[in-house]
Image (cartoon, rainbow, N blue to C red):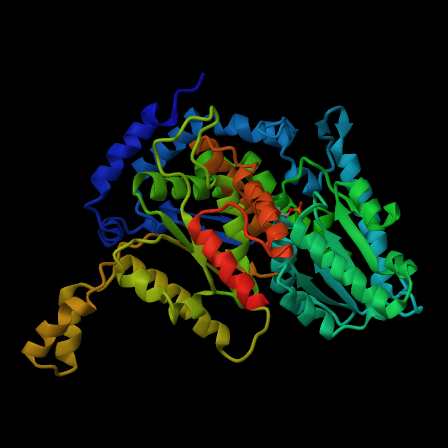
Length: 547
Ligand code: F6P
């Protein structure tokens, strides 16, 4: 029986090391070791991973690796890949890796070889994608499809939309893809306004096919189509579904052959590799979708085979734990210096926070450490002109991931050089800071009086010592997206195992799915039920104004 995490010798060593490092500065660590970059960076095909600007030493890394070993991380990883039901609160296997198992080796769950199921579904996706993209799939008036509207929310939206945005530079003119996730009718109204029902195909993606937002949007889409076609027979030509729930898809009116399957061993936020990724394949072609799976598969192999100390997802997870649970930094910024990755922060918010934003361990006991940080961010350049002030001089230290690429998707003059200059300069400044002597020298050189210099100096000091990781991709293409997302997925797994968090359920979000139901019926009946005085007051105000 493994001891509670904070009783492990490695955990206690890390607590001690965190105390010692509180007085250290990254700048000194770089000054003391000319080889710090090579000590704390790794290169694998298509990815450079530099964690030398994290506040660690080799002995901290050794203790982190010892922690991983004492938590039996390797054994847990093998259980996940082999299909053991490690999502024990839902009694499910966790096999998003089987969706991209390009070696096609058998993986068994409940006596079934899921690899065969995945291959069958991929073949179906291929045929369908080719039919739609070639113009052979016809709408109710015999016209080819020009636009795809993907309806889904959370894991049934964020992955496909993030990847679509990331890879838009590679799309041809065959199809446009639009996303509707919000139940706010503004979004679907805005999308449908531009479209022709005769040439629009809806992909309704919902693992459960019960999510109210998705079902409401799908209902509106059906209405829009049948208003135009005057005939429900059109639904079969304009709606396909991705779901585990064949009963519900049939009840909705979607023929079984137009339903793409996923399985309960795929978590919603890990599902873009399944048929949930259908909009990606429709937009970019089946081969690009496979490239994305290939990129993820490379990382799966790296995660399974590389020694823990040279294993990028393992280090990502351990560094997050070091920053959060030991150094007490409670937020983490995701800063892509690549416009193509502009949805990455939103995608990783769900990935990390829905997975590990929890506070009890495997045994259901409250943990006595901070679990995962608040994840936030936006593209680096836009962030620089918005919240970087806080990152540089705020009272809270926010570790950050900088993500950039060697080659831009579009080479326009020297844009990429300017972009990446900012990447290097910002992470360097967050590490080094600017001390009072440097500020004084700068202001003296500018000819300011001694009095003015003293007035300004503390305002212009930057403490530095802000930990960052830099990830440089070759170029944001389908393989790179696959690699990057798989790296973060496995990071999340590592965090979960080490912190003893059940990463693959989401009871907090499930709660939200039911919460609005009672109030919805009260609003429909124009009445206010039993609530606290604030909720009653708010509802009464809203209802009065809606009269
Ligand atoms: O957003 C909460 C959640 O439960 C996610 O886990 C899931 O990805 C999303 O709802 C959508 O659920 P479904 O695919 O069943 O519609």
